[in-house]
Length: 442
Image 1 (tube, rainbow, N blue to C red):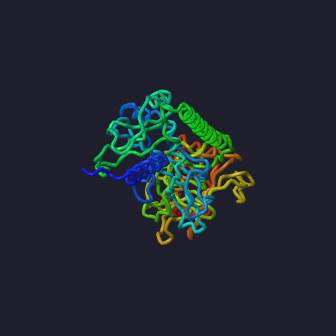
Image 2 (tube, rainbow, N blue to C red):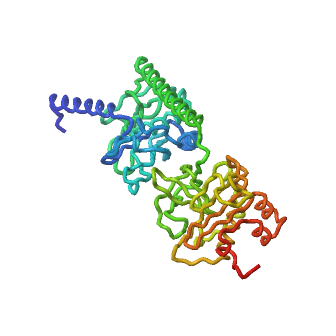
Image 3 (cartoon, rainbow, N blue to C red):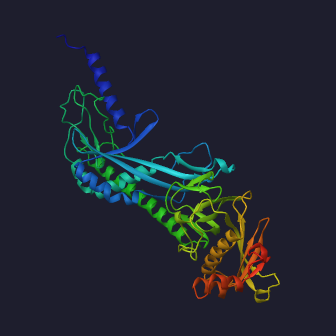
């Protein structure tokens, strides 16, 4: 075979050398597809050891973000409109054909977006800028004892050139620069990153390069610790801040916030776990909450962690019936302005009741039954309320309205079953009486 000319051999050698420099400059995160950045590293350990390391750092690889700045890419909307940021890292562990294990990290970041138009508000998924993934991979490297990886990297190896044996490769403290043998099919599987370390390949012939790699590794570990401490300090500040006493927390994600206290009512939004809402009132199994500004909604009481004083389930609440005739619209504690002498001028808890559907006619029996349930529920809540009240007044805000006033002692006697229901109504002030009791009855 005819031997290539000297200029041709020089061109081939120059091309090979330029190719090596190009691969050495590739960053740690390699794009496997257009506009899709993958954060991954190769560790010189078995798959079992890598999985064990992933499990050890899994609990610290998810949680709330005190701020989105520095963690997500800038989108079309300003970051100050986002709140309640949350992140979770997932990991994919797979063996590498040439040795070691590939760990790929993916971070999902979500946050509540508050749009000036309330209907456009909601939770949105944001694009991570790689800081969370890099931190997770650093912590995996810490678990896998970086000293062992550095020792493996210090073994003498030869540089790879076209035509070298397929066993030649250069390792680093965090991964490997694995070059394919002649005839390798790059499309056979999704390959690992060409270079997974944060610096240039470590050459066994150069002690300076090894020390440089160790120094860069120490700098990265310091940055990781500083970031973790920063997040922990912000979370501690959040916990130490005064917490309002009238906030209810959502128990599970995708909890519906409804426009009315009915299962068939329109859904205003779906709340995430641990979202908090200010409690405006409680109507049996429904809780009236403030969403934002003047926006209001209803959530089932069983789906909320209620604040102190409303935390226990109320067995005397109206039945769990989405077709209830009445609902409590408002509650307040104020001096009694009526003429009934036992409570005149004394502080009372007023429960404003209105029909759920103005087109439905209600009977005296319906009103008395619902008033009884309101009396019993309110008497339990009064033990936790400030200022204290000496009586309870149920006001029916409807066309055939009226109000019933009762001393707290009478309601407690009814709850303790020391008096009958008929005796309880005789101790109350029914105004007007005919709105609740037939005048022909004694």
